[in-house]
Image 1: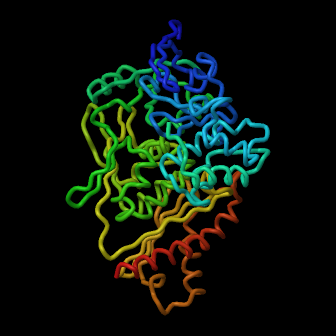
Image 2: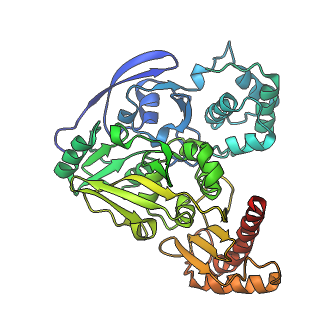
Image 3: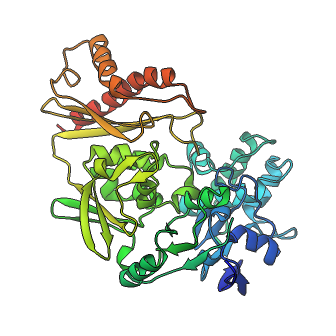
Length: 163
Length: 286
């Protein structure tokens, strides 16, 4: 196409509004990372199998790599950065640290967002619920036991913030 | 991903006009969980993408009215698997869609997309076949209904004309004397395409039907009408032999997920498993 179309979209990301211009072929993940410098969501498989790009879109866990940025116009997004930062970790983030559920850390943002969605929709999950809730997230180093422990500890604490 | 024009109509007449202008070099976008994978790989490189999520007449929703249940084209898998009317009346469908991808995928993937993608391994197809689903197709030229078995015509191929799309899926309310169950063979539990997907339905008249996915070019049904499989007196060995014979109609291929021999052998195992669950359910409602 000779005249490359550019689309104007509005997003709310971690409670902050953005009005940006995007190309039609850019995914939501591309735009978050490269245009908004929100690099918590990661690109790994790029086809919806690993969950490293998991974010909440209008409250639902989704793979940001499988959504066009232009499609997301008007959406309210929460990424790992929206849960808490270095000085104010969310209960789930703190639980991952405490349980030793983070090793290389690449899967962690997606893992925590999928876990946050699980807890938002099912505040008292069983271990089986946690395993099912995280079936779309792959971890290649720590292994899953500590991740599951971390999620269960927060669920049992009942102190989680729902963003 | 090659660039394209992105269009987002808000009603059917605008959608039809856009399709007319763009056809044949366009793709419809609903959940995007299959489409984006193909756009990225370069398998699809259309000039135009028409996002149908804003089309008022296609809104997602599940409505039980009279003797049918209607599922809007844009209804996603997460909605289907948790909807009360599906869980109670079409449990095998709830089980089937619960197995699609991951929760991240199910929050986006639409039922119409799963059918239009026409994968031999489409998870929803065997259950929808068992429940005698019909597909309503619409275009500027009008509406028509097709039985699902005539809608999926080959791997990746549907009966849709170039200007047509799916409006809804219609399921008759199942007879009171039937029960069904879904089972699936995969390499890992989450986020894997089915090596085999299988749905079994039994009724009190002694008819057993198996809908089979991923073991032929399209999902299809095999039937046993003599009451062998529903009988309380036929031995397990004889039932196994009967299922094996029925499953000879399958034409599995060898691929990355399994060899054809393994698939053929496992069809009997899965058939027995689903049969046993379906029979238990039938007993529970009698």
